[in-house]
Length: 314
Figure (cartoon, rainbow, N blue to C red):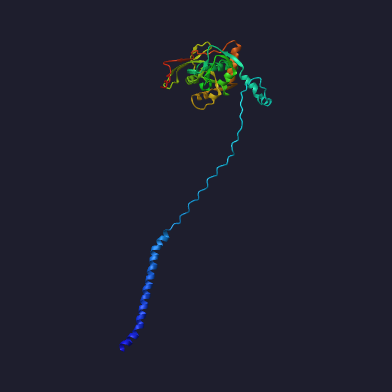
């Protein structure tokens, strides 16, 4: 009985102990599971990046719907354009202010005989001589006194050749299309001697220049003297004042070789364009019974070999 009593009295405590132990074990497992989830799941949540959705491609523009081609009939014929075609009154009225000016270009102002005028060689060839002779003659007529030297840049001559025969106003316009005007300058002998060194590469009237062709095929000044009315050489007097004529384009250059022109003691505009002076020169020569001729009169004297010619392509 004692043993039974002990069993009966000790069984509840044993049961209570067993239940508490089981509860503690379960609680511990739950806590361990929560801890494990917190440890391993936290990095995943921290590094999660929400990626943007890819852009929806824009729809390609719809191709325009073209109307079906329309068949048309085409007819062509040739017509002769001559005096038999009646004029259009509206067009003739529109062109009236310009018609007379255009007709003036076809007017014959003189005659060129003995061959063409060519822009070739030193001093722009016979074409350069023609223009500078005209400048010098018209400046003399305008001022009423001798002109020692006329200077013109070869680049201002815009034609390379004028054929022999009738000289028309259009020939002069094509040769001298710019509105350059003549200017008379007073320079001393020292300044004039410097100008001759520059003009060896351009056109001039009134001097004789000796030159040679350098390695760049350009005329290089060697010496220069003036020519009087009879063509005799004259030394330049450094203390004398000379009257020369050139164009306002060269005078207005602020740099380069022709900046020497700014040293002139006086500058007198002649109120005459270069083109008109050459037109008047041709008319004056024609009125005097003298035709224009391609003149190469020894105002440029070459010393040494000819300039080098470009080799023919192989």
